[in-house]
Image (cartoon, rainbow, N blue to C red):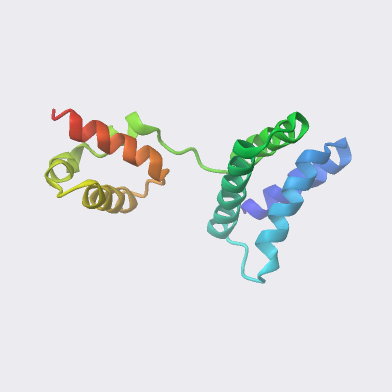
Length: 143
């Protein structure tokens, strides 16, 4: 289970004195277990994505170099536990079976709905900004 992997890495970080890794993993584990819900891999992934997004937003506003360095380290650590998501080019290829429906959609909203429904049905997790980029490509370049 993913929660066990987080705990193992946290204990290893404690032993090696890696404070940044220890603290971000401790925060993630705390967020997962705080609710008392079963720490399923899906729940852990949701928490990790939330922490990652928060760190990315904080990093964008950060001016202190030390803080930026720590946030970048935390982001890398969190990403190691998340499944890799396809980029815009891969998504455009995955969406080829519904490309005609996407092009025929009334606008960006309906096109996004078609794409997300198709990707979810295919079991593909994707960032919405990457899907939007892929949609823009599909709508510009009819093949």
